[in-house]
Image (cartoon, rainbow, N blue to C red):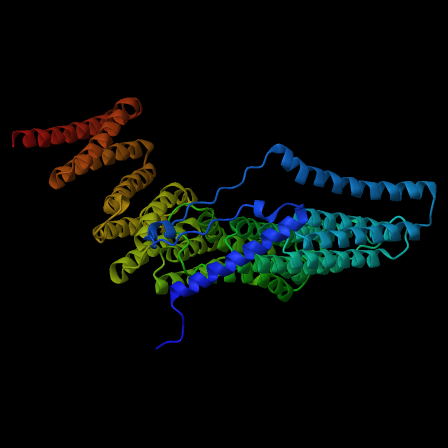
Length: 621
């Protein structure tokens, strides 16, 4: 047998104890108010009823708490008047110092000491109010007291010159530390922001007679990085944003010479960026992650844009800061894929923008610095970055990393070689991406193959063609070889195009797009090559060759359309034939001589009749 009482007996004893306590409370109330204890209503004892079934859905999804309404009078009484009182107190202290200084009432030492002592007293009283439950009121008083201390120290080190300005800055910083400790003790973010503002304003309010920018950077690093770490530990988002933005912007405005192309300045900027990357990896603060990193990149670019006088080793030491930012961001974005996150949240948008900007920002900074290693090898750095991204995308099967690797390799070709060689390089990259898709089924390879197929055609037929030398061989120069390689590569890519089981619309029609680029390269390339060859004989022969080429190409497209039973291919052939006919009628008729006219019109007639015969034969069938 167990010695423990049954549950009903235990509940009965608890009810008797509660009743005894209620009777004692009733008697105390009667003693204080002078009333009869029997007149105070007694709370009826609740009846014990069988336990009702609990709705699990209600426990899982409790109703949202109703926020109490607050009218304008209560808001103005609690907050409005509090702000007015704090500002009035600070204004009174400032006016008192100025008035006492103008009238020479008391000595400067006493004036400054009064402001400091009064501020400390107000802050102490605010601290005591917070302990009694008045958090907002006490925090405002601490802020007002800190402001009075700031005014007193500024007056002592500024207009009164009682202490050295550098000592005054240190005293202001010590006061800031005190306010920050109170903010941490009471867990009030507003106090931390107030203390941070005082710390950042101290050097501006008490500038030294001889500016020392290196010392100023050290001061900012202690205040900004230290406050940023505290804000991260307390999850204070606004404090972190103000600390890091102020850290970078005050350095840019107050110590720009120390930031210019020196390792100290570069690593100062990188310190803020690296802390931001580390903190925002654990805290969802997209505005800090995006804008602080972008500001850091802009500051690095501007600082290295001033050509330094140091050695190449000094340059690389400073560039190491830029590599550190890119390397940490690359490591953080290995997983998960920034473009794989569903939705359009601010965090996903910031991460994607950083992913796209980071490697190219590093390349721009390195270009601005201009170390000797990269002077004659501008494609080396983008190729190295491309290898890093491509290796990560290959091993982790991450499409964005894989695509970025190919994009950086393509950029390396652009900055290293001529436009024609770039077209050949891009053609090889297109085939490599297609091979990665066919052999290893790497995600993102089809995007690279199709994108490069379109880009190579545009670059080869619109940009590289203008760089051809006029006296170069027509059919055997480098541009012609690039054209032949592109035509063959697009044909191979279109034949080898792999459509997945559940394709996207662009994947379903990727082969058609490559065939279109192949056909366009044949048409435009022939329109460039044939007239170029025959124009070296006579201009009339060049015009005739162009017209004949268009007619033959139109007839071949129509015939191919009938063979493949593709209406769009036949329509393209008819469009080319219409263009050729317009050229013959509007241009060739007025410029060609008699025999050339006969030849071109005879060719037009043959092609037109052949096409018409093909259509009529198909209609009969």
